[in-house]
Image 1 (cartoon, helix red, strand yellow):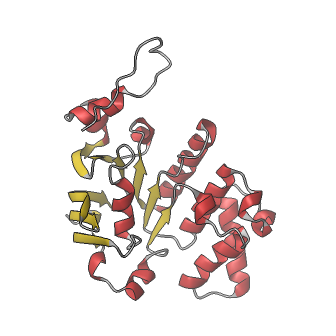
Image 2 (image 1 turned 90 degrees about the vertical axis):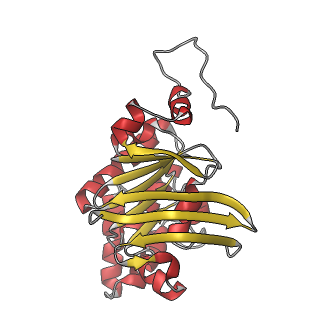
Length: 268
């Protein structure tokens, strides 16, 4: 389809011969958000990592992953680096393990800009400060180290790094997992506004089906490495066809359903 920005087609991932993802097909349309939802171990993050070639060498990936005019799985590492961090950026679920503890936040944002933009040192510094402002962090914190930031601020810094080169596709891998409810809402709002302002496409990964209701255009549900249901957000959330999808929705706690036993997802 001409409006498809990222096309994951018949992709399988194996580690030392053991299948982790089984022949899945997922699309992200231009300017839209596709959410991949499922419990831990369903293959969500493995799928996301395969897009950018971030899986370990023990992984075997088959199928096709087409981004714009590139078949990503056939690119050399050198050519993939020109896309990774520039045209496609990724936000990881635990920023403390993704940020380098011995470099300041500013130095890490500047490195990302320096790799893909040919501008002066002063221009790089100004751009880094601008990115911090955009995610709600004061410019003078550019000299701070990751451990001097709260969890929410570290995630904001990661978002600043991801957006610094104005990517056309953003992959967000459970960016709110380690955050409290209030901070999670703030981060979700920040991502949504950044996407709208920059007209980006987004692949959003989460275990929480209800979390994506306000931002996703399409939803793909994964279980045990398999794609069990996909469709537009309204269809999946309000008219789910798969028993597993219905169970995921039913096992969410609700303030108006007290003293009732929550549904559990059956083990395969």
